Amino acid sequence: MRSYGQYCSIARALDLVGDRWTLLIVRELLQRGPCRFTDLKRGLPGIATNLLSTRLTELTDAALVTSDQARYALTDDGRALEPVLRALGGWGLRYMADERPNDELQAHWLAYAAAWFTADADPSAPPAAIQVVAGDAEIVVMLGDGQVRARPGRADDPDLVIEGRPRTVMGLLTGVIDLPAATRLGIRLRGRRELLDRLG
Amino acid sequence: MRSYGQYCSIARALDLVGDRWTLLIVRELLQRGPCRFTDLKRGLPGIATNLLSTRLTELTDAALVTSDQARYALTDDGRALEPVLRALGGWGLRYMADERPNDELQAHWLAYAAAWFTADADPSAPPAAIQVVAGDAEIVVMLGDGQVRARPGRADDPDLVIEGRPRTVMGLLTGVIDLPAATRLGIRLRGRRELLDRLG
DNA sequence: CCGGATCCCCAGGGATACTG
DNA sequence: CAGTATCCCTGGGGATCCGG
Image (cartoon, rainbow over all chains, first blue to last red):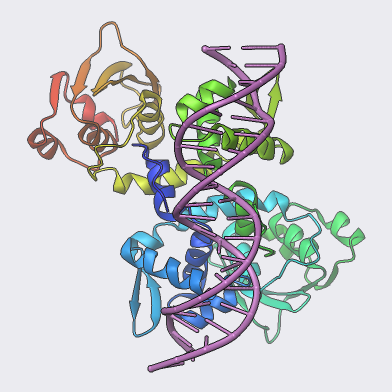
């Protein structure tokens, strides 16, 4: 990328990660951990292979990514971008209620959203598991020790099951939509609904 | 900008503000408050006038900016990007020690850096003023009430004067460089040096 | 001088085919 | 699987022009 030529830390950050696709590649590496070219490509629907290749060498040259036998991983400087992605994703939540039927949804995106943008409002309460189903995307949200963890997949015996359309589920989880509204939008709950209040 | 087509709040955020120059325009509007086309252009050296014009209409269409009689201002959604710029600028600080002689420096960039990336470590101490001089850029940093404020310009009777090259001054202010190193790099101090410790 | 609009040119991005 | 190579096209950079 062409430098902005400004002695400003925002401009310098954008010199490094302001190119198209770059921050999304960092997102994938943050969520998945070290992974291969093809894994990245699958997690970035729409990217051209030459672009992914170019970006990875740029990120490697900038010392934000290392590659070892075709496995790419973030360096400490690269991992330090997490607060940036959190801030950006937190800001973007307000637009997740829009309908865009053609948008792709991958389960691990839903997982990081649940983990990053919710909190356990009752840290002393016993652990609990919530099964979330939004179309093809299924994740398990685990509450406990004041932490919210999430992973793609199914739980054996969840305390609560939330099922509905992606935007409704996302809105309910992140608090953008309240329960009555979510119900009107067709969400289905089975189990201990009070766990929703615990997701502060 | 072409949409990433992903149901992910980071991707949706980048759909809106991921284009070249867009976040820097938001930076200018955040720091300066409402201003005119020409003010923005001066604060964004290197931008083409047609691009600035295009970006402003895009931002207006996205309801992040309003324009009223040729004065542009952020909306609430636009102002909500401040944490994103803080995170990005905070991350970028680590690259500010690089020499890039051709980079432009404007005083208000130094001012927001001082205000955003430092803190008053001794909130109960009486107010104090630091005059910072880095090349042509002169700012006043004001400590008091646990806040750090900064503005371009000169102070009448500063408690401390810091003078040096931009990267040295920036590094010292933000704590990336310590005082002995800054001294070796030619920084000049006059007045109450202990105020530097107060900039936690 | 301010606030753009227009034009031309080139670099960067997108889609696909191909190779070790 | 892990990329390169190629072609095409859009979007950005830079200069100039124009109405108020």
